[in-house]
Amino acid sequence: MTNKNVCVFTGTRAEYGLLYWLMKDIQAHLELNLQLVVTGSHLSPEFGLTYKEIESDGFKIDAKVEMLLSSDTPVGVAKSMGLAVLGLTDALDRLQPDYLVILGDRYEALAAAQTAQILRIPVVHLSGGEVTEGAYDDSIRHAISKLSYFHFTSNSRYRERVIQLGESPTRVFNVGSIGLEHLKRTPLMSLKELSISLDFELTDKFFLVTYHPVTLSNESPEESFKVLLDSLNRFPEYKVIITYPNSDDGGRKIIPLLERYGKDNLKRVLTIKSLGQKRYLSAVKHSAAVIGNSSSGIAEVPSFSVPTINIGSRQKGRLMAKSVFHTEVNLQDITTTIKKALTVNVGEVENPYGSGNCSKIIVEYLSNNTVSCLAKKFFDIEGTL
Image (cartoon, rainbow, N blue to C red):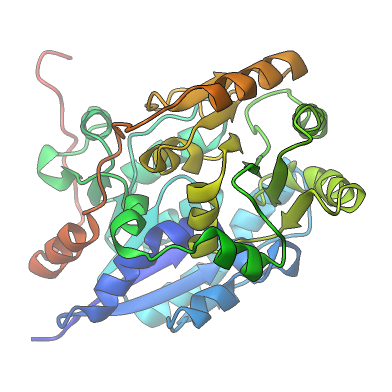
């Protein structure tokens, strides 16, 4: 029997980090061949050339698709998507995968999903049905769900939402968040090891900060980020690790502010393009709090019993553990919320995104099932018509 080719798509550092163990399990499976398509910010010097981390982890990249314009506007993002479709068409036509695995809600992922649909490649979508009201990722996620054949969601409520979109329950499975695999399978660094790796001395009094632009808002990314930096100045006894934003429109406006803040506070602040998944999760484990508006603060951080200060509307609508403290984008509110989070013992937290055992479930399902026809009947929920 011929092995199935399972192609995994990745366009950002965060997405790759979540997919790591699934890729390892596909790679190790006797009846599956792992293919890997890399694009987006992975190939950009501005965002750290993170494809090198993928290769250093032992993965062979089958196709590198250049698509990212050096632009910081919605027009630039839309044109980048067009370039992605052109490059992905050639790559997927050459690789001829049996499945294309796509995680989440990025515009790069939408380009991959629509390309696969036209090329008649079944799309396997991870983390569908979620809600992020403050970003255009929300609509993109639902669009990818409609372009996908199999669905693996991170919560039972999200499974129901994918079904509500008209997807058959027989093709929608709740397996939990893929990123939580690291809790059981990735050995993390001690605080000393992390400090040596970063060449930046850390104690247990430091914040881990990631802030992305809010793409469905009139909010200025620069002004919002300045407010965040001002709030960090209210806690001079805490060191700060700040990672770069993603490549959404508005992200490049944040980078000069971030770099200047690091240069002005060399002994207290470390700015870094990409920590890599092991260092990132090690930093989460040892931090006093995770601050910003990254989805990681919602899905993964609660499992470490570390408080998350979630700023603004980007993640609005997601299920959140009790260790997540929400704040609006103003100096007083952010400062007060950080103080509150530092004084509350969050203790053992029930994470609504599972416990980290989904990769093997996904791999076994893909190895045991074959798609003979991509035609899908719209599933109507009884009593809704």
